Every structure is written in structure tokens, then in C-alpha cells.
Image (cartoon, rainbow, N blue to C red; front, side):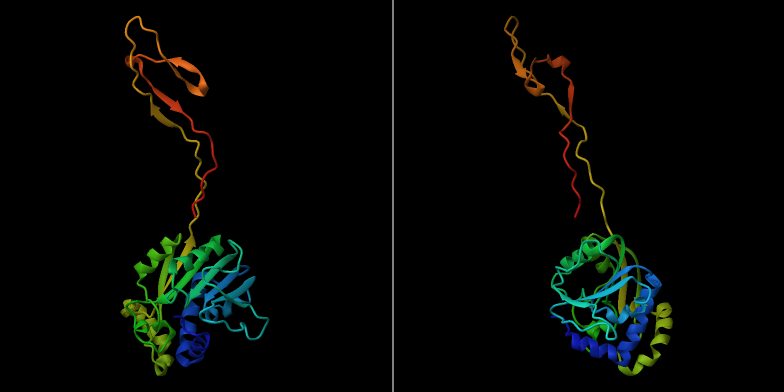
Length: 275
């Protein structure tokens, strides 16, 4: 069951939520820069981390799962957020250059279908960043934050899931080393600097970037070789039997000593495009 949008909004209005917003938002900027002239999708509840992309990006829109609920975003301009089924995003194929997924995968009833929709709306040269609670981190073990609900992932598990959805991992990082306690939010920056060096395995989040796998059309006009059937020789003086040949013609059977491989060319047909 997904967290309600009101619960998510309350968390990111708290001191700990603002610290999480700063730490994860920095990782997004490091990965993408300012996304100048690009189309960006914030999927799940990723709006707290994409506000800094709005000035330079061509378009930044948000899609929130129906089970979670939606809020008006941004609050200071025309609404750019929509409520959607997570396995049927209301966008055209290959529309977005960048997609950020936060609070989307852990509580999805079908993570592969969820990511395959990400694959569908991602441009061929696009990149997606998926942020999930780390299986070994403290944040996955407390229910006081939204990251303590649903299924946490290890780095290997997340990479395998992305590949199953035809998304190839291209890089990864960690974030949120501060303990998930509100009064410690003021030390979040110090924990972030020290944790990445001293105890990297105990980060609260794993962020993985992936690119869209696309495949060339495979032609089906390749040659294939088949071997002629072994003939039955007629007795001496008996009439030579004739068998249908290529294109309905008749040709005499060849003696066994002179059998040869025949080369046939299947009729050309359109190739298949991998999903």
C-alpha cells in the first residue's frame, strides 16, 4: 500500500525531510546538470528534487500514482502534476529526456511493469535515475519516514530489476547517511561527507542511473543450408523416377555419390523489433 500524498508532503516539510531534499537533489544535479532545454518527468513523489531544474529545462512535469494521490505542483505557477495509473502513463512514447523516480518503485505492486512504462516514455538517448531505500541502510528499518515502507533494494537487486525492464544501468551512488531522526537533521551535511568515506554501505538510499536499451531491426533474409534427402536408386534398366524440383519443376534424382548441399534463400520478411 502506498503512502498518502499528504503524509509525503508532511515529511518533506519537516527538518529531516528538508535535509533529504537537499542531499538527494544534489545527487540529481551532479548526474544531470541543469537539464538545459530537456524534457523532465518526476515520477512517484519526486517533485521535492526537481525544483532546481525548472529554470533551465524546457519542460518539467510530475506524475503521481493513483493509489498515492496527487497534489498541485508547483504551488507558485500553473499546475504541472497529474494523477495516473502507474502501468499506463498518459504520455507519448519516447517523450522525456530525463526521468526521476522517487517513492515509486518500493511500493509498486508490479515493479517490472512500472519500469517498462518508464522505458516506453523515455527517449532513446534519455536517462533515468531511480532512488530507492537501501536494504542495508537505517532508513529502510524505521517507519517514521516514507522510505521505511515497501521493499528496499540492494544495488545488485535494483540493477537486475532495471535490466529486466530493458534499462541498462550506467552508474550509481548513495545518499542519506544521517540517521533518520528529526533532531539530527542539522548534522546531515557532516554525516553525508563522512559517511561516504567511512561507512558507505550504510547509506539510506541507493540511486541508480540507467539508459534505454534499443535494438536494431534484425533482417530475416539470411541464407540457410539444408541437405537433400538420400535418394533410392532404381534398379538397372528401370525407369528413372522424377521428383518435383524448385518452383514446381521436375528433376531426376541424383546418385548418392553425387549428393550435394543445396542452398535456399527464404523469402524476405520484415524484421522484429525487440520490446
